[in-house]
Length: 161
Image (tube, rainbow, N blue to C red; front, side):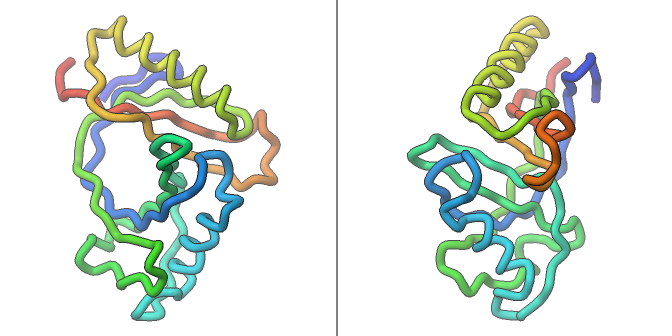
């Protein structure tokens, strides 16, 4: 919709995701990444392989966090194969408008907090309301040097301006 430096206002269609709880938003070291990876590599009732897309979404608090993979656009919630792992769920995220800030670096609580505050400050200056908790998007594998990594923080907002 609009771009101002590293800040963007975007309209997203409904997205189908597979998600799983994770102990923290830090890395998926608790096996959450591999639960989702097993699902897309055939660990589902149809034994269907599904292309991996980016970003990997992280949301929630450290005590109640989720990790999610976005399904390819051709797969809607009702056509995604049923997970065989009870800790993996299929869900549709509703369409909406989001304020987004792109940032680089490794995944850390400090960089997430700083980026979230910058996004909130920009939204306030633009007169945009916040209507969701933040969602963090991570686009690159862990071996990508931190300064080259593409990360984003997103906040749902109303469809104004």
